[in-house]
Length: 276
Image 1 (cartoon, helix red, strand yellow):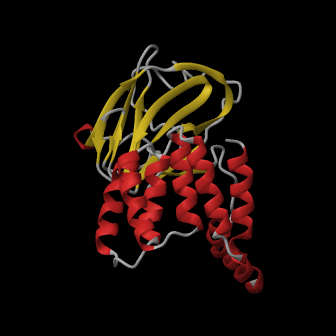
Image 2: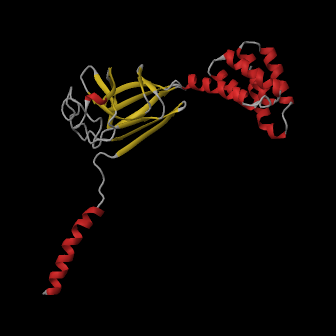
Image 3: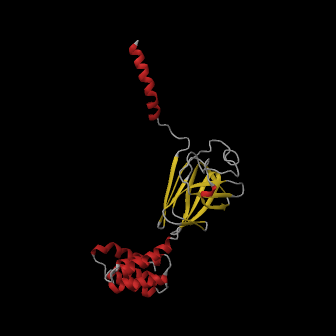
């Protein structure tokens, strides 16, 4: 009898421990979207509710009411650098991302109190940026999701999708502007015997149509070392300016200077310049 009582007592003590060890799937699973946009990393953490045959807008998610933009914990969005959201400045950091869905217009809010459950303790005074956006008709999505369908070196179009609604907003990282400023500083800091830094800066400027800076920095690189890489960028610049004959001649000079380690680059130069 005593032994039975002890076993029952041990079983009762074991119940809380077993409950703690039990893992069950969340009805709205966690998700993370991470994207580098130029020099800036954007990370969105959220829970993905499903439609599951329910009426979503105006029912499960009421109109004109603050929403956590997902399920469980409030959705958060982190920016590694200062950005602008649809033209409004937002300092770097992590924010709770709240929305107020409306039939014709949504309000988006970036709240400095990032870690919170749902929207129950939403403090409007801590909204750093709020903006109005127009919802769009979208393809059906069973599970709520964030996506980035369009992106440039500077900007990313972020779209919240659920059921047949798509809600877009644009983040501008101003990465080109920041990179150009960084390039100027880096070139000033390097020794005059270095050609790699001005060449990298010139190539970036060329790729982003900053031709004045590209030419200045390429000249600096060429003044130090006139090699295959430098001449190839020079050839591409000439071709862009419409100087085809001079561009091809410069490309040939780039190939002529190529050593064995640059054999693959030389073959690529031949292939691309032949298309001119």
